[in-house]
Amino acid sequence: MAAASATTPDVLHVSLVHPLRPELPAWQPGAHVDLRLPDGRVRQYSLCGNPADRTRYEIAIKREEAGRGGSAWAHANLAEGSLAHVSAPRNNFPLAAEAGRSILVGGGIGITPLVAMARHLAAEERDFTLHLCARSAACAPLLAELRQVCGARLETWFGDEGRRFDPRRLGAPEPGTHVYACGPARLVDAVRDGLAEAEWPDAQIHIERFQATVDENFKAEPFDARIASTDAVLHVPADRSLLDVLREHGFSMASSCELGVCGACECGYRDGTVLHRDSVLPLAKRQDRMTPCVSRARVSVTLDL
Image (cartoon, rainbow, N blue to C red):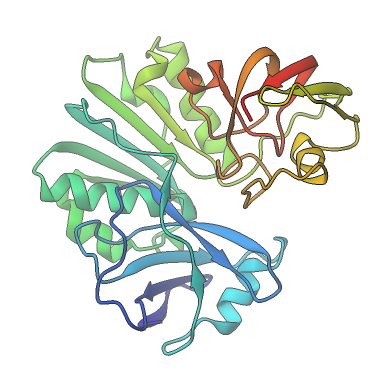
């Protein structure tokens, strides 16, 4: 751990370096890493540093009093000189290579992947605007860095100043313009709905969520999973996940969040009606990919395993 300091009263900004290697694996804006806690739990945090800097990874962790304990451990234990077990980066929220203009909308701790995007876009002198939403300037993580990186391209929307972001201000879609949103469900849902109402193409809208999508009306049903390589059929009860059943039958499946937000357990399928319940797979991948930690099937599915 190279450094750890408070960027707001409840957000810890952490800089990670390898104890032996001078360079870390390369990454692209929008990527995240897994932080493995001593008890085996894994939490995902977006990289918010400079993608061109291979010497360190930077993350920002908000202390969540009602969370699952990972942020509380991080705030209590991560300090300069301490050791942390961190994975190589993965990216489920990349910048579109074809984008001529980028509009970034972030709320609260959801600003973290957008900070890396802004650094990259600014370094390449590409056209972008970043909308930062928070209760106040004091509650906005990494605000000083964003002001330095973005300059006039940063628009702040602080509730205590009577300014609230309205997705309608983004207007009608334009060819080559892509929108990226990350933050609380209320914000990203408003952005998604506002853009849909304005008839923005799905391919130009990119959303990342830190929490699982809640569907109070969903009722899990049992289904069968056929393994393409062996023709074996595994029964998945209504009260168990496909991921659990696969592991029970000897399949070594990678996983991390098990909430459908990280994509670590993604696998392929060949046929069947899949009920996608994740918040990570883009529409184009859902034709033949699924996340077995939360997604299910109607009656049966054939897995490409």
